[in-house]
Length: 187
Image 1: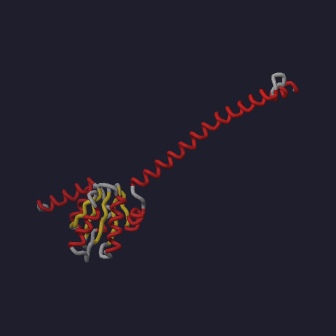
Image 2 (image 1 turned 135 degrees about the vertical axis):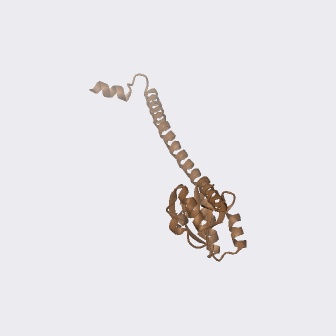
Image 3 (image 1 turned 180 degrees about the vertical axis):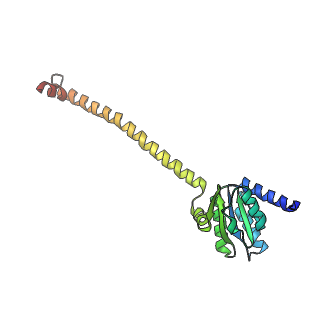
């Protein structure tokens, strides 16, 4: 039978996995307490960085259906549970790892899909969600503007053509038939 404190720890980690849309596993061997505190601050409010026990975290991950990470629970492990934008958290981890090579990104999970360390680095290279949404909105607005200009161009061209024909008929005099009328009479 499991000890109550371990069962509570597994339940807490399970809730962290369920409440987050991404989790990044790291190895923190060689980092000082001050460096870990700095890392937690750099992750911001949308992520919780927790030093965890491998066996308990593996049990919690399996309870929520994440079995792809089982081989990564070795050595001193800490998990960044991300509740906000995963791109921002991946960037913060990548940047911290550049400054502190002791932090090693092992892998993670995003919306239930396992990610390798390289995929997390690729995620960090993406622009933030807000920037991508702004670019999408700009592209959609541009397409709408192009469509509106196209739909406006056809009636506008027709009006200019009719005005040009009217001017030509008025300049030619009342007795001169319009070119279309001449073509019809010739047939």
